[in-house]
Length: 550
Image 1 (tube, rainbow, N blue to C red):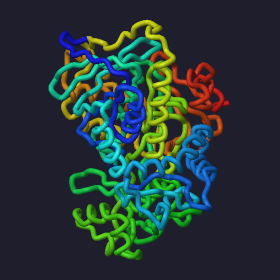
Image 2 (tube, helix red, strand yellow):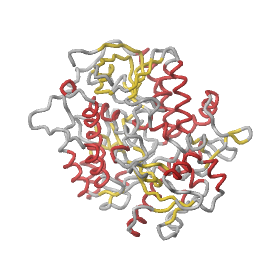
Image 3 (tube, one colour):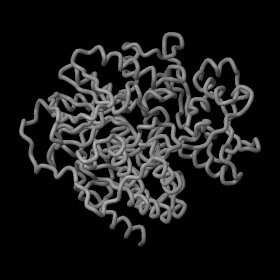
Image 4 (spheres, rainbow, N blue to C red):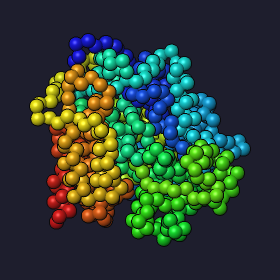
């Protein structure tokens, strides 16, 4: 612990200020004091960047059961049915609640305007133009700012979770002024988002480096499914080299995918063609890029009504124009880029992790909903549904739990020895290159082993008091999550959903399970995330490898 450290006590601590974090904070604040820590500036988050919308079965011809079936299909055999049912059943009422709060969804008559996206059998995408994430997070943020029991803190880096081997009791944090804070909390909710920025070229904001997953893993919580990194099929690379997402909803409105020679290539790939699930489309684009020796394919909107497209997707049209592309007259050059992490901190349907007092929600969590591939527009929905559920569960646990904390005090931070490598100044660039080249859309044992060798050159543990700067601490978290992703990808000897192995191109029934990684334990496989949160019945991976070899 640093010698000078500010002390603070709070009922519920929320780490993260996107849709999941704000939903959790507002729910918890009905009964408790809440502190929200944001690593960046509000309202910066992946949620605020979300374009498409929120999936909810609201049409007369649609049902939550159909939404459930589409989610399970997209998940490639790994989605757990029970948490999916919780998700889809909550969706219709949630849309009404958000509209009541003031989120400016587009309307059609007396109801919501419903869009169509890949993998969905019905029009069910509730949206606010092509900036749905911003509409939701800005509304929730304004409510949080006005709430008397919610405190918002920007520019705060969460360094580690405090507590014992069995229970979380708060966090150690470093603020933007270099001041340390020891925050004791009755319950802690991690809502830190995903890790797409590990890849450099991504649809995510720059801070999406897996902070919450690293914090939970270091504290001893179980994480799973980290090998499943979704690459969004249609990302436009800007002049600055950043990724700008072209929403799936554009294809839902009739946009076509063509190779650089102008030929459609999805017709023979899947019955839904351009509206196939994301993993299918991303793989097809990847294969087309290789076949045509190109770095992009073409997303063609030129046959669609220009006025409608500009009204429906104003941000996309304007951004393309700024990059020199008139989408009404010429196709948009796109390619897959890192977009979403299906895996994360293992939780049940109440957001509880394997550590008492610690909850997780949103992209940093893993309930088993998304399986090997997330269905479009289920992400914001998951953030809001499980953000609220985690807050209610945290409040209930605080009321029932004893004030003492069981278990031994965690060893916590480790002072590096003389042999520990130092963090290179250009770690973001070199780490991103390793992840794109070795742990990208297509993988192999050779590439993954090379990645793990390269990642071993980076330190992942240090004493924060000896290196009190945000960049080094960020790097420690990022490299750890990169290692966990690469490890999961190496262990899973099959191709399934978003995980494509060049050396194991087929899906294997023996791998129909979730690979769990937990500090101090050998990786193992479980059938269900929610039904086996303690993982006492998990199959050791050595056994899985023996079965496959037999």
